[in-house]
Image (cartoon, rainbow, N blue to C red; front, side, top):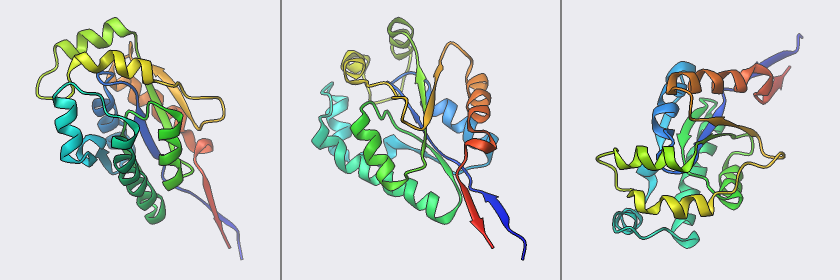
Length: 182
């Protein structure tokens, strides 16, 4: 019997502070790679949305069930082999660890940009429950990816299409986990 090697479809968490373009880039990346897409905001319980709408930052206790729901989604995508792309601020390492508990091979795409640029984007954004007044708390909470974390950082000075292409290149076939079968 010949040994076959199958590349699993990637599972990507597009992370960063509010306003960096997570949703736009994640949708483009999911489309480019033909992967299922999920918006982390859809996993928030109503109490979290009400809190953020009122300009009150979430605490770790608020985030825990939300992150576990996302980890379950990631784990399901890994288990069924479909891969997937999800947006999630994932600002702290401990949050990313919760996500990795559901999917150890998740790739974190950290979209990063300067405070002034992101503040300007938020000031012009409509129809979103996250007010720009919470941006400072997000930057204060942000713990950048560490060298031992599977992922990469991209500067949002690029266009969303360029970011999706750069992300796809970073994921390349040698970066994906392999499944071997006889």
